[in-house]
Length: 181
Image: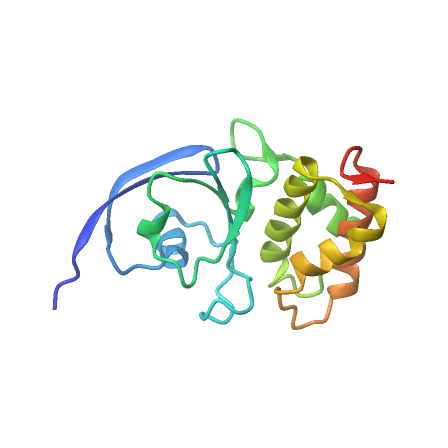
């Protein structure tokens, strides 16, 4: 049996990737691991339920959306701009981390994670939510529901939900322009 391949080109963490011959049926999760050695997005359930595998995709208008990689083929991402969890922190020219993203820093300050397996998905979701709030701020009374709607689909087997939620809430409240009175 032969796997049919086709060329794939995209941008990952602000770097052009490809064209690379990639099997047509390969899931993005496998492409990230096997072709790019980007192992931060986790294979949790393999069915798109736990959201540990999510990455950020930038839409044409610049808005961000969360996308599961365990159930979406690599070729769906052709021509798109993708950010994996490895692309959140600011790095120097040698790739050393200089500064964590505000979401990553908030999660550390709130001791949000225990085993950390689900953390990449929560980082992705929270980053997408903050982008959405920059574009469409919510009232303070609506913030907790917005966070619940965003983080509610993510599964944390260590039950760290409260700390993730608190970190995102505090970050949203401390970031000017995301929440209105």
